[in-house]
Every structure is written in structure tokens, then in C-alpha cells.
Image (tube, rainbow over all chains, first blue to last red; front, side, top):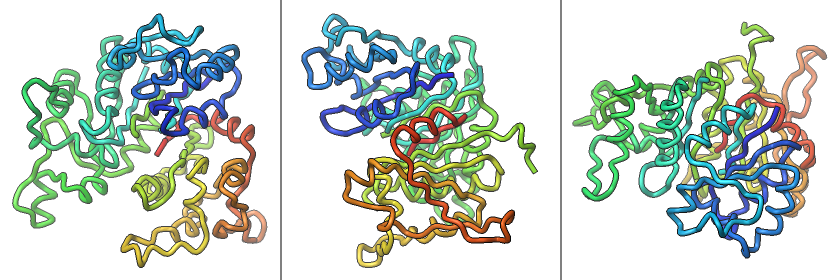
Length: 102
Length: 130
Length: 138
């Protein structure tokens, strides 16, 4: 029983990531997509909080969206895993529900 | 597994329709079923056949229409949202006294009940928007 | 009647203020249509979504559709669970007293009028999300 939360907004512009992270249950999964992946780059203002949350909930970033924005996988906050669209499908199928933070 | 997809934004301004398309394609390639794709809010603008993007860019409407044809996808454009935004099929155009329709191949116009039904009939509802 | 065992739990996740964008209005339109399907329906108001329930909204001078009164009629559609997040209210300097009264008639208790709006804290909201089958985000 877990929820896959998707976040597609830059945390530097909107509060979708913060709101998502505030509403996680233990064992939930977070997938950063579209501009949401901007949060995942190490050295950014959200690296710390993602690192902290990552200890109880798995955090993923959509690789095609990272690549489109010039963010190398090697530059991600430690612990964040990358998936492609097939991996996104797998995460959605394995979770009990999907919650989009638009 | 049976997925349902809701798309809340039109093509090009937001990435929502692109992401939903890639998700749907990946799901189908993995052997999952897409029960329905429901276009709501500005998402109805994915369903006009009159878009002509530059040749070096993707044509989202075409991509959806082709995916619908190859996989018998049910692409539903919300009628209430479509009427607000000028997306019409032949029946609606006639009913509303408009001089033409613009619905793209593979899309159909129907009611919001189709979204609720998709939620009931599918295993997972995945929403893409802004 | 839909069999209680096959009912799905629908959660409408409202995080946006009304009028600046159409999401609040069109979300409400889904709720009204969805009511006919006799599923278990809850509405969640988080972040700017709490502004959707502000009392005394009047969009006349703005030239927009006055749809806020529809929330008050939700009880007639058997939509009785409107969860409003306390932290979201607090951050915006609001209390439940700033929100419109939304009630339903409880047929099990002599049709007594009861409030549909329930203020919950963030932890309860997280549990709500985890307890639903279908989450429609607007």
C-alpha cells in the first residue's frame, strides 16, 4: 500500500514539491517529472530536504526530463534514482494509487 | 494492468500532453491496457486537427491520433470543456449552428461521466497537467 | 444502487484559488457529474484551494461566473465530505469562520443539518490521500 506522488513544478517557482513532501506517508514514492526535476540537482536549495525525505521515501527523477534540461545524472542529489517512461509506468503500476501535485 | 489518463493542458504551452503521450506509449509497450485518455480543461485543445506545428517539431495531435489508431485507444474530449474552447465534432457543430468542425481523427467528444467511469473501471488513474 | 463493496473512493485534490484559473470551476463540474455515479466522494482543499470556499465571493464586477454558491448545494448531491487543511488556512491568515457554511441533511438523524466542511491537519490529510483509490488533481 503506497502512493506514487508526481511533481512537475520547479520548487523555485511553485510550492508543489513542498506540499507533496508535507503529505507523504511512510513508504510512499516521489517522482519528479517535467520542471519538477529541477529540484533534483545537487547544490540546489532543495537538495537537503530531498536528501532527508529520501531516507524514508524513495525519490525518483525522470531521466528524459533531466536530459532535456541539461542536468547530468552524476549531478543529482545523492539517493535520487532515475527512471525512463517505462520506469514511470512500473512505479505507477506497483503503487496503490498515483497522486499528481499539479 | 489497466490505466486511465487525464490530461489537463493543451499541447505545446505545457509539457503535460507530451509526458502523458510518452507514458501511454511506454505502458502499451509493456503490455498494459489504456482504458481511456480523458482530455479536460485546456487539454481539449489536443483534439483539434487544425494545428500545424513547424516541420522540425513534433505534432502532438498526430501522435495521439496515430497511437489511437494503432492501439484502438479511446481518446475522449470533455464536451463541456470543449464547447468553452471551440472544439467541435460534426454533430456538435450542427447542433450549435457552427460552420465547421475541427475534431481530430481518433478523438471523440463525450461527457464528464466518461472520466468518472475511467476512474471506476481502471486500476490506476494518472493525471497530467499544470 | 452501487454495491457498497464495489464503490471506489474518489478524492478531488483542489490546490488552486478560484477565478485566476478555471481549475476550481471545472473541478466542481466533475464533482457534480460524478455524484450520479454513487461512489464514495471526498473533496480536499489544500494550499490556495482553501480560497475556493471563501464566504461572500462575488465575481460580478470581475465579469466572471459566480459559481461559489454551487459548493453550498453539494449536500443535495450527496457530496458531504469537504476536507480543509488547517495549515493551509493558517498560512493564509484564515479560519474556518472565513469560509462559507456548507451543510448537508443527515437522513439518519431526522434530517438534521450538519456541516460538510471538516478542518483537518496535515497529518490527517496525508492519511486521507493514502486512503483513496482514485485521486483527481486539478
